[in-house]
Length: 319
Image (cartoon, rainbow, N blue to C red; front, side, top):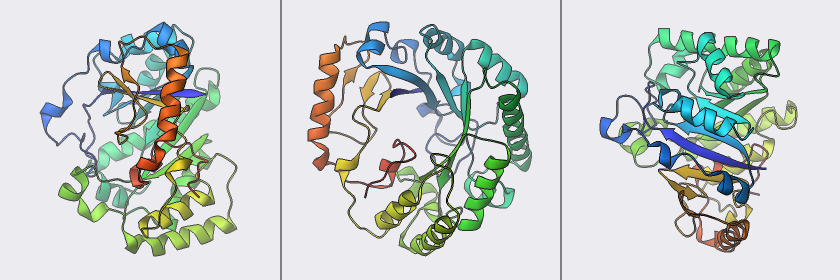
């Protein structure tokens, strides 16, 4: 199964302190991405063996061409997953998006308590409360219309604020109660914006003690397979923060994830040694396999850092 993850807009209506795309940052970064940079041809979809479309951003619900993008990929009968902050995800919006062809939703939220949430996202309490209500509405829609919305998930960015067992457990319990399919945790990473604007949110060696507490509790309370990150994820993250080397050869992206960023097909944002190339190029399946082999053969050039956890599947381990 190969996911095509497409950045369709860098506009955003959330003030995540750790993210360069937040609504308080420079406007010039949020120019609209043209359609010809986000629509992969039928032939290339087949060559890359794409089995799911994932729409990302920024906040993808703000994309001017959202309907055109969704209906285009829906015409190939591919499952379409939307990653959103949930602020715009009213019940009416859910019904409209599913009508266009979206059948999977993932909401990014970093805490269930506003006290902690506000330390990471500078949004009003009203926005936070509305987002929680939207999440509950989505969960109910999923329960009563499982053929229309087949999957719902949460993504949680781990920072120095929420990388604590009682917050992690609260989020997981919240998701279990609402019958979410998955809760994925991924560490915050520094692309230059974090250290400049919110250095207090960085994960450092100091957080390894909190990770020990998380690891101890997960050993006692194992979760259903693939519902949330396994024990190995937390152990690998602890090693990473302690400066221990993790093997780049364990990267799972070679034939599982393709990133479409501003018209360029890539393995990830950070890989400089190998990428596929422009969206408008015609790729044969043989071309794809050769590029994937080159990527795999050059993985020793990579260094595993917090950003490397982001695109890996939930059951991935670097150990």
